[in-house]
Length: 533
Image (cartoon, rainbow, N blue to C red; front, top):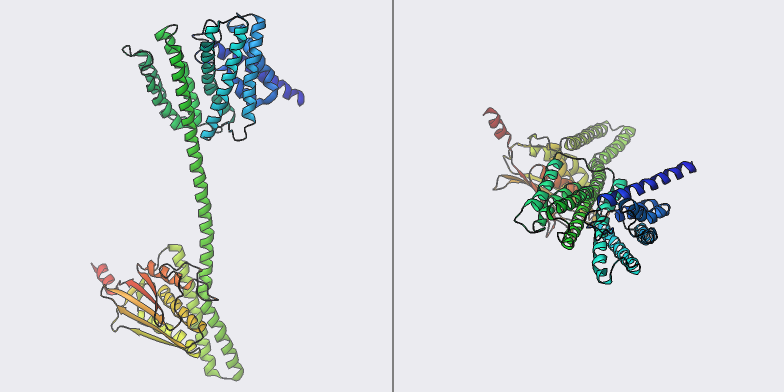
């Protein structure tokens, strides 16, 4: 297994040497005095990427690659000894650049953040400047260049290497690490045509001076980068750099202003790389936002499930408590032989069981449909049922229940079970508030028609009212002023009111709490008229 792995790495090292020489060969255009100094020099980018990905094992390959390329492409014109010295110096510099990237913990070779592009630009620029300095010093010491050429040679060597690094290194890193690559769309054909057309205008418009229309190349590059992110930017930059070298060779001859061309190529390369990473950063931010939204939705679903369970428990608590009480009364009446009391208790048990079933049915319908089931409702009859259900028990606790309704109040369309339950909640809340204050009192329920043709159901008690700071406008579920309250009564009543298209108004009156339900009137006779029409 170890031998297989070693052979594989050696094969990759040899493949790197072949690719290095091939890149040097195809980019050997417009060289300075026959030296390996060209407008863009891609082999250093390959060296940095290979060392970053493969580590120390590939360092020897990187050290000898420049000498091999000089021998194959230029025939070791400077002599084998000098070429080998240059190879070791330049190769060591770019190997160090690859190791530097390796040890920068925040650098992501997938270029998901602008920081990654800036890191590569910084490391690549530093390595290129050091390599150019070493290159110039060795050539000057060997007498291969004159002293007045130092700045020109250093400038062209550094800028050419920077361009090559920023074009080739991201392409190699992305090819190895970026998964999945963007799927090509039919739009890519239009983008490629736009790129070719831009190159054609830059080099084909005879009235323009050298590179006067260079800015046109930014348009297809930005289009590609914005569509495909870092991979698109890397491929687009490679195509543009190749097109620039070929176009400049055809249009302008041996030296069309090499310095200007290099500056423009550098600007284009940096722009494309940064825009590509901006797109990736935006995609990652959108993905994180979606994940956070999903987490919030899951949390809300869990909370909603808890609220539903608590609502059911709250709504069913009163019937179950009454069932327990009446069952005890029935058992005692049976022991004492009081058949009349037993009959009344059994009747109450039957009534409470039916009410519990109705409550559960109403909640189930509401959850399943998301709406209330509206039927003809005689609100006066519903209130009388509540009076029969609660008045006796409240009276034993020293609380008087007073129910009043405007004469000739019409039959309306509503969910009678839910509406009755909302009023029941308000009455029970008032009773609990009075008992908690250690006093006796009264709860008044009054139903009227407003001037706006709305049903107004007012529940007022003689309790202490709502304390300061209690949100009477939007009472949140599970927020209560009673020591043993669940905090659901008011919230459920508000939800039922709003489900009917109405509202719930809460206030503290001089004599206690006052809650007003407003419901739009839907008369049964109006519904019948609409059906006949």
